[in-house]
Length: 278
Image 1 (tube, rainbow, N blue to C red):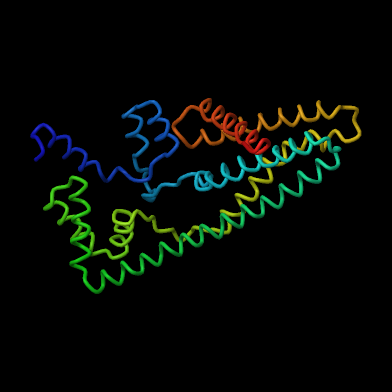
Image 2: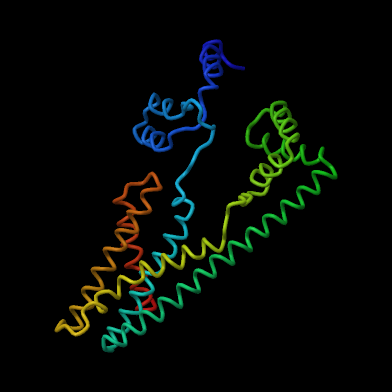
């Protein structure tokens, strides 16, 4: 039961519910960083005449593909450069090996990302079809399962049954919620595109993987020694690992410094592992 002291605040919140709708996501995130409740409230105020919707950054939807492709692109290409340079091969050989490996691996990773995501989505939708059939055949059983799920999470059985019963009136909402709560599967949205996810992974791999080769590419014909060229490659690799960490930090709550050093350390370790095989 709610205490009497809470009721006036709850009533006031319900009275002001019509004001809440589309929020300023930038201000909401800033309010969270500053732990400013008043600023958060203002961010959630509905602008007059605006629809009650919220637009997230599209870039965050592809963060996994960007980081996954970029980190592997940097490490794999630098490992090839390190091996070729350590073997005493000329600049031309380093560039041929580097570019051929970079594009081959990028294509492989991009296709792998797209096909694996497509297969995962198909498996999820198959499970959803099964749950839909069970709901149509025996809705009481599905409702009982959801009630059990919520009671195990700590909800009162009476409240759980009331919530689930009302939710069951809306089949799609009920099924999508059940997929998450019971099976731990998030139903893919209509706008999800596995092929584009693969393209993002491919592009990120090529973009970041290009930098370990730039020192060799733009110094053809120069008098720089192989040691100096390899040093430039090391510097470019380190800089891009820092940048990749900074990009990742824009979508998380951790410090950008932590992310950058994490990428650099993991990248350095992985590169050494690739070179030594230990």
